[in-house]
Image (cartoon, rainbow, N blue to C red):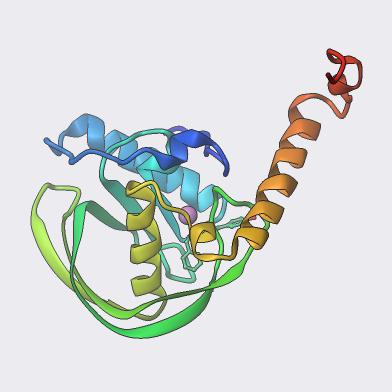
Length: 181
Ligand code: QAP
Ligand code: CO
């Protein structure tokens, strides 16, 4: 098993729409195992394939306290939505930021499991919110898209700055760039 690299907002690859999974085979199950390992190590409660730069409609979730209730959703579809709920959300692709988001309170979802069998699930609470958050990833959408432009820009600037400091070793290479015309 491998720990995969997670893309961070505002990486444009997070905006790609994932394609339907055509076949649930051994290589897909290997990817699922790597996604769980990556999510558990973070630690997180949900991870979509998009976040590890795989643009297929696949997500993994475990909202249990003991990390012992893995759930796999392949080609997930929300069949019904009821009620409205507000919850503080975070995201492994937006590290360090948590904001309140409004979503459906209860959903019915249809998907394939890791054996390629179809199932339907009624979810509420944290699981319902998490499924909606992760399906958004497959459509290139992030929880920051529900915030004001001001909040989203602040988050983007802070993450861009962290990235610059991390990758460029805390040196300001722009200071001697071409003159401003
Ligand atoms: C989505 O998010 C979610 O900022 C899953 O530094 C979150 O697992 C749905 C995480 C909340 C509903 C409610 C975030 C880990 C994990 C961070 C996650 C961080 C480390 C986020
Ligand atoms: Co997320």
